[in-house]
Length: 199
Image 1 (cartoon, rainbow, N blue to C red):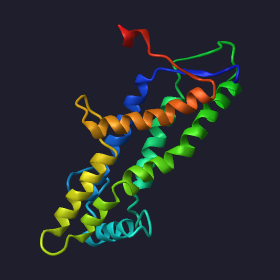
Image 2 (image 1 turned 60 degrees about the horizontal axis):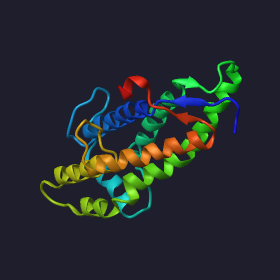
Image 3 (image 1 turned 120 degrees about the vertical axis):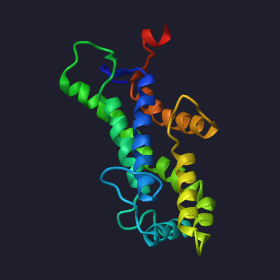
């Protein structure tokens, strides 16, 4: 166990996940034509269907610039990195900058090693039957039906975290918390709720 280790307030993770999932949904709502976001535009229905086909047939996880796994992974990476880079305190006060950086990097490597498979499972593998259903839509109105089906998949796989938590939200939060908590504790770090949060 390393002599220098970070101590984190687990409450900070919730805010990190909220930011990541909110940004992911805003982007994909725009892509699917179900919302608006500066810099993101509705994709042509043939491109969304091409993505859907590759996922439902398990031949690929993306199509051209349409990369749902990479999009969510990038946002989770960024948010979790910010959390890990800012521990509430340390197990030792007389640490060097190099020791602190190495301690955080050890945790980060373990988290990110698990994050890709977690994201792929949540977005693609677990809801595969729903992707197949979405792809089967054809004819008039199929573009909107497919877009709505994909949104349901995303809403369930990576739900936006709000004060009102349904079962999917609770499950997602529990799983991804463990994904971060375990490496922190395995590398000698600690999780301590702040006194303010306890009050």
